Image 1: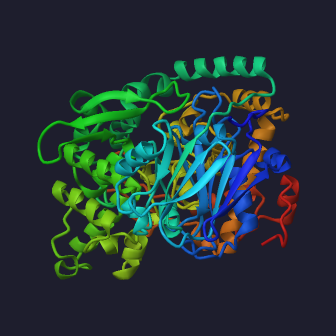
Image 2: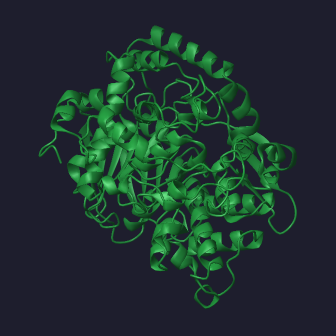
Image 3: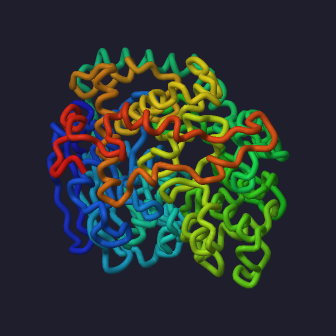
Length: 611
């Protein structure tokens, strides 16, 4: 019989010690849930309390937490999200990688808000969790399999309705940008959480839950759900663009605005952008669109390459995949980019970092810092076959793929040119060149998990004009804008809903959803305070992991080298004009450390503060 729950939380935490093959069930601490909501926020608090932030992310002493939010598994629009929280293998910073699909809701229905994984199994294993029954099973027959093969075999072995999160060969081989993949195509994609899972010899987690969820105020909750549903349907992004074309609508927009990162951020305009656009995908390879649990948007693309050397089917490419494996590598062949994206899903790799790493290596090669004798072949921008070939080599850590598997930052350092790494805190930039968005530059520099567009996404105001347009080249007011967006993003992640709702979801409606679901008293002011609390906690973790103000920066290319053509010609990111103001608005000292007064204001009761 499934677990019965109340007030949108399952109320339980499942803790598994892989080293000793033991597990125990703990009660959820509702005082911490009130402060951090769940998912990203609550799991980050637990990680902070239970590990040394200076730990080697691939050691057994690191922990891996699968965490749901209070709206996960409810009928709240897009309420299907969960987060994998750990210390990132790519970044050495706190990692909180968010994913959709059906895994998060199923974990809640099995009776658990969080799954905490500790230690390291002595040989490959997988977990089979069915309600209150857990088995740690041998996974030797699954080790080495791709994601889809692993999922199919597990469902044949156990339950055809099981929902599975797993790693592919990239995670097993400790590729530093390996993902955790669930539902075959949904990825907890960034910071190397899949490598941490691989370091624990954990191949997969299969879950089947038969429980149910209730909310504190069903009448108000359903009224809020209806209002949010209408808001999403009326907004042009969530009601028209994403359902029709998916995230690929950004390809033309970024190219037209001169901020489509091309050839390792050497240019911001890509001549072949149309070949990779959402419109071309729609007209050539799209089979249908697809949504995650409780999602009215349906942004995912089910696609098929019907003929040629890249024949295959799957999902994608999303915008970030198309950018990373396309313009970042100088490639405009849609079939090749799509095939490489399929391979990233099968091997379990972050498509952004995969493409960025290849692009960095290509620039190193073309500038003569990396030679043919070291690679085994030429590494040139614009070669479709090369991108597909390298993707598989990285996933298997074969040949030069073993070097690439360490990520772009380590490659650039290895070959003596760290300035060619395009990222922050070890994590590669996504598909938005900040020379076309000053707030995005500040957001990249200060993101707690390294360069990231989802940790405060100013593109919808600086470029798209929702709800009003800010001048993207001005730094005035950008510190306040980015702080606000960062705090709010921490709440949506922690609530268990999709980031794509941010521009379309009125904040008072998110507060209504949370209040009526949890029974907590949450208004818009409290929403932002919760987000600020989470952001400060993550910051303290990183400071204790060894990061400092010097890490809140951008590559010299973005600070000193303006574009020579396009809408952003002559523009650089003026980070210095924003950073001190940002620290001041956050209540941090001049070195970027949260003050005791700020932490007391937020109710962050941590020992030995300030840092």
